[in-house]
Length: 313
Image 1 (spheres, rainbow, N blue to C red):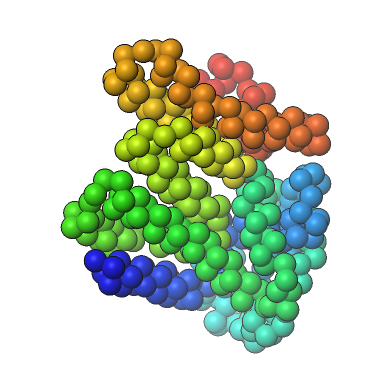
Image 2 (image 1 turned 90 degrees about the horizontal axis):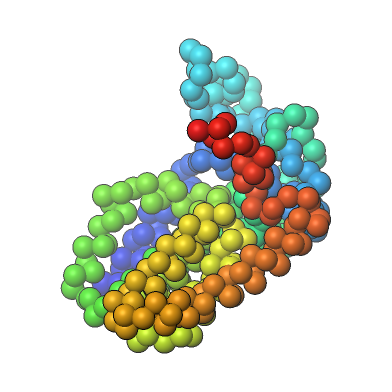
């Protein structure tokens, strides 16, 4: 089983690696916005103050081949591959983005807002800290480096999930079916073998899954406390950890209530998750409200709080 497990992980890793290296820069979902925010984070010495919410000018004016996009026909109103290879852009591209280093100095764009400021900064600070020593890399190499880093977050998440099922549910042969998941659902590679904060969300949720199964089997309070901490870290990545937090509370409450038939006992149990989560959430909320004058959960959540219920409906 160990050999099968290792072979499976290696196959997933190399498929992801192949996808990373054949995908041109900024071709994957929102990579230009994610990369721009990482560069801004490095340039500002990882400050939490949101001074620059516009796209980096160099990324906004990227001179590499771009995919066709939706809109008005003929859908090629920018430097698509046809125009790129028909013109004299290739030599400039190689020199500018592949042969020479691409520094981390953020250059404020003109008008385009970086929509990835809808999310809290944890992913961008972590990846920025890891990338920052490699300032001699070209843009092309930086993008591949960040893709591999993000994919490794997701791959570690897969490992943790499989170990959790084997250790706490006693499933060994049955788990073989899970191996086919990336083959039947290749969106796994498109989603995680790219620059983006979804990979670290996958990792955090995998660890939460591990401790959820551990609690389910042993009913130990320490697992719940660790889940609360992980959810607190998650809120620094994406606001969607709030519904995950609520879902886990309901899950734990009803599982415990089905055994003890005591609402008070079940409620007390959920406090092991509630308190560490609220400490993270509260400190982050107060700090960002004071520094940036928003709720710390990103621009979309901030806008939502200023929209009336009738407008939402």
